Length: 403
Image (tube, rainbow, N blue to C red):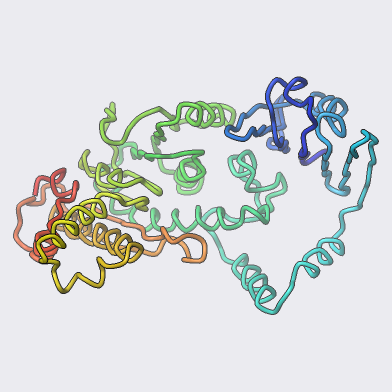
């Protein structure tokens, strides 16, 4: 059985033959049942297209295009790797290689160029023994379909960081579930995921809650890109997932039928994180990204302060260099967010989402409503007020929380 087929190095007639100027096509086995077990991703320079294939359609596609429409094709089964190559004259060569544990070890050994790389590989191997909330070794339908796990339950090497990221986020969610479910008195738990993208996390949250925790949940994934939402909707339908839906919408003005209990924003751009509080949710899990609001305001202030020769001395070194100013603005933004949320009755934590080696955007804000009827005008947090006034900035969140 074919597990995957990758086509690259398109010939000049690719667009004419297939209808679009594809640069690469990846096809993988994604489902153990149904009439269309193969999932295909076709890439142009600017777009990605998704489709499904039967086994017969895949065989025909390989026959018609390997070495012809694409000069390079790699086909993998459980025991063999076949490479079909075409040279400039159109001559086709087929190479076959058995896949064994010895070959895998040899490949890994050749890739180790220094002791540092070797230690990194050993470290990753040790990490893989961890007991994740979504465990390894057992096939999980959505992970297989999204290309993170093989049909046998093994994590694909290049997707291991994504697998760790998903499980790390679920740990943060799991910690607050008892408090949230205790507040909703046994009714269905409602969750919104803004900027869901391809929805690795959305599907993971649904699987974790419904299949592992056995919690009745309704989850909606929202994104501005219609083609992404259509893809996610088709995937959810294909997996027959109940209580999971997707819609095109903006976090700033989306109208719910029922307000969410938990709002998730993974890598939410700029002030999108702030709109998570708009609906008075009981918990927020947000990883901010692209934080321009305060940075832009500081740019304007810096020009005026320089003209007036009144740059605040305590902030002068932080505002002098562009990169440092940008990072300072991001940290100041999240510090003020945490303070404002606390003043509005939330218990707030700033947590490290994933290691800095994977992404610098690794701060996660976790806010849990301590008391739904908390006094929004309670005194305190004078440090936040002082910082905002001294920097002469007006964060969006302060206005949204009406404090």
